[in-house]
Every structure is written in C-alpha cells, then in structure tokens.
Length: 253
Image (tube, rainbow, N blue to C red):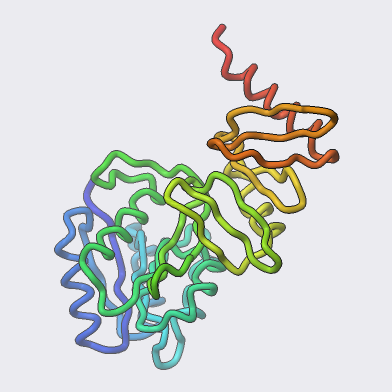
C-alpha cells in the first residue's frame, strides 16, 4: 500500500494548514492535496483523475465562500467513482446532510488527533485498504448519532436491532442504544443489503444476530442477543424461510 491520497478543503488558511499537518502525520496517508474553496477542490479532483491518480478521500469544511461543503459533497457523490467524504466543521447541525450524502465521518473543530485517526480508519475500511487493525468493510451504511454534544457515526454492522419510536428510530448496539431522527422504513431500504429484515411494524433486526425463533400459541418471537422481539404474522413465514436457507447454506457438506 502506498497510502491514501486525500484532499483537505477549507477556506480559512490556518485551519487548512492545521488539518493538512495532522493528515500528513498519519502513516496511512501518502499524499495530501489542499484547496481553499469548492471550485478549487473540483479542479484538484479533475486533475487527479486525468493523471490516473484519483483522490481517495476529501476532508471537507462545510461553511465556505462560494460552493459550500454540503453542495460539494453532493456533487462528489455523483462521480462515477466518488471519493470518500469526511466533513470537518465547527457546526453540528449538518450531520443529517452528511448522512444523506453517505459521508464516512463528521468531525467537529477543533479536530482532535484521535478523532481524525478514527476518520482515517473509516476511510481505509470503506476503501477496503489496510487500516492498522486488519479490518475490512463489513456493511454499507453509517448513521450520525449525538453523544454528549459530539456527533459520532454508528455503522450498520454495530447495530443488532432497531426499534421504531414515532418519527425516530432507536438503534440497539452492544454498547447501548441511540435515538436518531429517521424512519424505520428508510433504514429498512438502506440497510437491507447489510442483512437487516423487517419482522414487525416496529422492529428491524440484523439477521446475523438472531439466536433463535420460536412459535408459541400462534405467537412468533425471535431472540436477538438475549432480547425477545415479536414477529408479526405477515412476516413470520418469510423470516422462517430465510433462517432455514441460511442454516442450510452454512451446513457442512
């Protein structure tokens, strides 16, 4: 591995130089380009593609003169092979935009080296490159959650099941639960390829975390990491067939 090729974008020169310095200090990064605004960033990206050395990730400020970071992030998502995007901003309120753009991470200024290192790790995992701990990409989605005023991205692979709570969804992980403003239907659509299935109007579960399924007096329940979750009648047969197929697929010859 020659290292990630990244682009740092910020219209404030001191902030840009500090970010570039921290990025260069990470051994997983090979090249760091810089741009002072969105238009300059697009020129750097176009030139890198023309040279056959595309940028792997863009570390992007949001509030900039001219083309702001959210608009630029949406433009980048339309590329045939889009670079990974990490937002670096002083403002918390754009986390939902970041989720919609499928950003890898969302860092708040002033950037702490350990948080930047975690963002680089996420980029490496997403790009299926060595990240220092042998990880590889395990799922196609992350979602921003607020923890004590800090925005953290929770990967779909960390979630065991999701519970609908009005206009919100509660993500249950090994470390606790997180309430996020997103509908269960939206998560079902986005995370179906990551192995999540709808078992009830109020529940979405990760199939790999299902320990057992049992039916008692016509009532179907699945156990997910020790928690019993009801399965509606309309989903019972579909879920049972899915689990049987998975069991047969994993059976040794």
